Image (tube, rainbow, N blue to C red; front, side, top):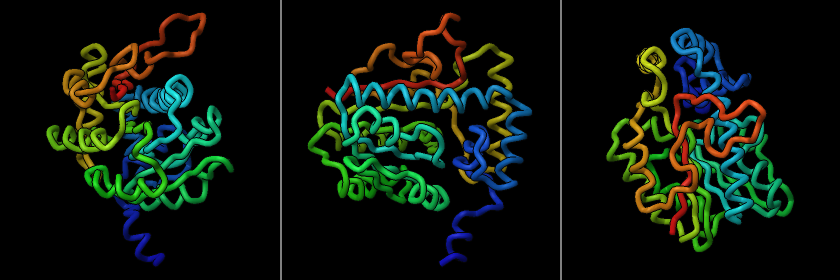
Length: 270
């Protein structure tokens, strides 16, 4: 069993969840992941800010859904390695009875999830090993914990850009959203080359190309118009599809935060 787990973890190849863990300052990664992160930073130093901003958006989006929208169930696909303020922690601070299902296809992620992602007593936290490209499997297994007759918050943060084919990605999102009842919400973040001046865009593209040359799962940036298509049939919550730093940021004396090269949005199913 241990040998099988080690072979599936593939510690000799950079993995997106573990590389992202490096950008977030985590320690659950391997030398090959740290080297991939180092090379990415050389091309595009903004990547650390993007990772932290993505994580901050998760907190704001879940607080909005659990608070203002009154959602008590969350399906977090592509959760990544546990870090601070995971979905269930944010949701259960607002509503302790919240039920959360995490989904990932990396066995290392699930080992850590079972150990670290524990629920409050009134709530429930569960875990599903599946790939985003398997929406039927995800929904069937999540139904053990979630009631799909009641609104669900679907979290697709930093995961859609790891499916290269645009039509396939749209189909997966549509199948997931179609299974949710009215009042459900979709929150997503996605890599893009549409934000930033020419120098930033070129650095971003060079970093992604270098990463893709050695990664197990390549990353595909998309345009704003393409990312908007994932919200087809949904009502975008204000302020719409924006840079991850500019979705309902906390007020500061310094004005609006600088944009980072990643889009985010929250949509409501009518």
